[in-house]
Image (cartoon, rainbow over all chains, first blue to last red; front, side):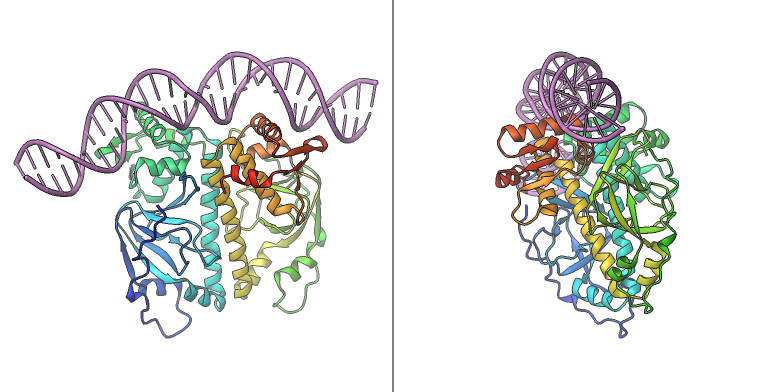
Length: 229
Length: 229
DNA sequence: CGGCGTTTTGAGATATCTCAATGGGAGTGG
DNA sequence: CCACTCCCATTGAGATATCTCAAAACGCCG
């Protein structure tokens, strides 16, 4: 599971011509950065790897997780397009990142990023705010996992997914990950996630379509109530 | 529980003469910042309060937590001397902070801090790294709460507390909080925490002294094994 | 010494887990 | 184009870790 994937950083296009000035913004840099395609189930990086790059998700979904020695796994976050992954202060990754679907990421040298930030308070503050938001999301998940029942956890997950990914006005969300991924995010088992989804369906709060990967949140208000905020 | 404490920011000494240069370090500023004494069980700030100040714990222990509408509470972290609390990007606190024992904090205006950071990449990076570490700690707790059994959670808590607070070579840790606080950190009940501690005592892995507030980690190796890393 | 807050201990209830079997959908190869 | 296979999701039944409710013990402070 923690096997090394030899293709991690083999992309020779990573060293690209960059704008001349040191004042290039993070977005500038990233839009010039090389794209890496990630197959479903492929790792972007693994715990223990050298932290050479920071990635921005361009397409698809990346599960960021930590494993215990005995194989139990806690997913920390599902990263969606626009999200940065691989930030940190150590020179090794402490988490692993695996695509749940085919995905694309842009790769930015982490030493470059750090050097840029050393001379650019605006960039450094942007990184700070980015991590603050990640922290807020992680805390929110911690509350969910630490205090809520199974049905509350699943409801909270669906509501959060809707807020994060649904087009304005749409009640449809796509579960672009397996039940086991949702289970490992919420601290439940696959079976409990499955049973809880069918319970929500029986309560007419959601509809499940297309082989279980699409969910319509028919009664978003009640779902939100169930999630306890 | 979320009642406003009128004494939050009543300290008129907060506006202090500061070093002339804008290059004052965070530590400089903080060592000149006003100290606020916090009684046991008093709040430093509550969810929803204006985020006017960032605090550095000088003495005592501060529980940082979030409550659900129905009163359930998840403690996010126990802040010990040296820790910063109240950082964030919003202008309201999204968490509450309450002293578990009598404590002291230094207060730094958050707008001042932010203005300093806007022109000082070094400071901004320091804030970034500080939040990164907080993020790492929160993730670690998330793994504990999401994946570990009661005995593993309590073991992990004791080991983490030891790493964070014990003098070199000492096997003693002080539980400067009630069982209910530990329970709300670990996503357990008071009773389960208590039972688990006595189970660890019966296994000769810990000794409990002084009315349950001091614990000797006699067999730190086994405790660490139990915690699963 | 009395009273209050807290911890410990016990016994029974229950939500979730575990183990096991079935079912469905997607992709592959004949 | 169909059958086969594999992976994943669902459903069921029984096991169990943890919770809930209740009572007793402890320690601290006035």
